[in-house]
Image (cartoon, rainbow, N blue to C red; front, side, top):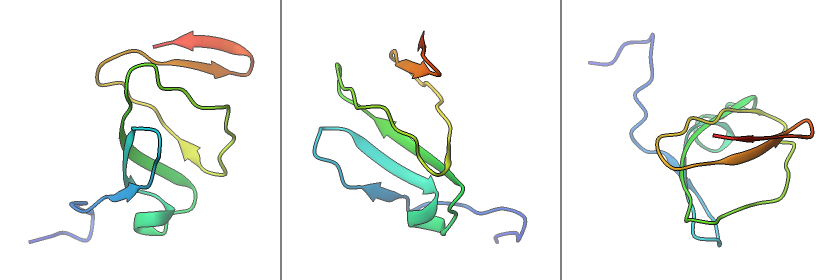
Length: 79
């Protein structure tokens, strides 16, 4: 039985990519019509990178394993 106080997401939206990464969005515009935030699981191949982005929604990063280098307001941070 499911409660009205939570959502059990079992069918994430798989974002189409052409660079070898896997993105499964669990909360966001594509899967839950939520335009202000995106919660997704991403697996990227070693050495993967992308240009700077300024999305129109809040985006959060949680590292499970590996390393990630990001630039925030001109400062480079390695996780």
